Length: 53
Image (cartoon, rainbow, N blue to C red; front, side, top):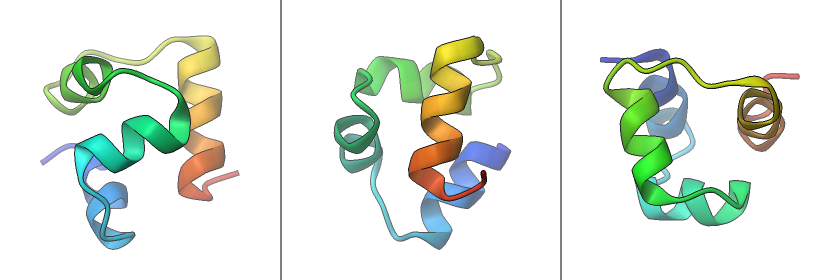
């Protein structure tokens, strides 16, 4: 299980909800959870939405 998936599940969010809150596509969330590392803006947005920063 990826770190993103763990954080998402702690907040009880499904991929669709996280994608909407972050302004990203569901496919982007799926790619990151499957192991493709996020880049600059995407990483910052996800950290902010998940409360990591």
